[in-house]
Length: 245
View 1: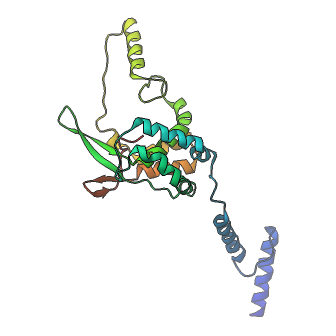
View 2 (view 1 turned 30 degrees about the horizontal axis):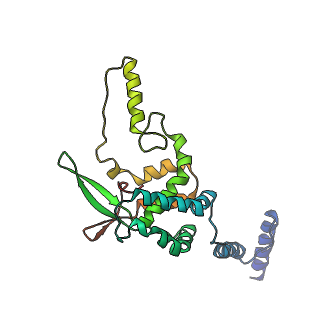
View 3 (view 1 turned 180 degrees about the horizontal axis):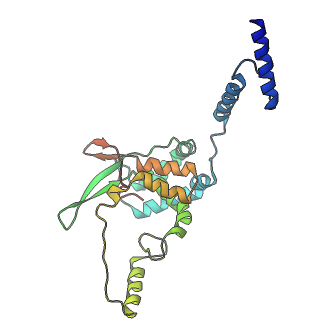
């Protein structure tokens, strides 16, 4: 028995020397200690600071101030909490530090959007999702920092909802084609596109152009924020609500 113990100790010492580590006859304790140290480091990490450069831009005072002003100019209906856009300056003045901390620590949770049905000319309805005023500010703040990232990836022939472009620009381009002799126009509409957007595919496309995990996580929780309809909360497995940003 004593011989087996001695042999085990010599074998452990030999293997440890080969790896450049001190002898460890007691199994995995150093590895466990290393993992514990990492966990302690994560707990002691300064969580009062943004984790990434893009996140730092997102929560900067200037960016949030611009977002509040933009949402107020756009007006719009209240979400499920009933807060109007005119209340935003006072609310952010009182609660911004709390909201900022939630974003930095990855605990921010947007509220469900309010489901509204808008009648269509063909007899159907268009489903809108109205975010709360506060969530619209965070969405607008996201748009402001993400536009420079994604704008260069879009087609030169895309004119909808892009800075410096409009439907009139698209009409002028069509007129140019007509003057060149083109005589046919093809009009396409993807039925219920926004209602059926696959979240995994969308996030995969985002990952191709952005590796910021903090901002990515914020986009994802907005997609999964849910819908409030007739007093009931519905999960959102597919789609992006029309009515937000």
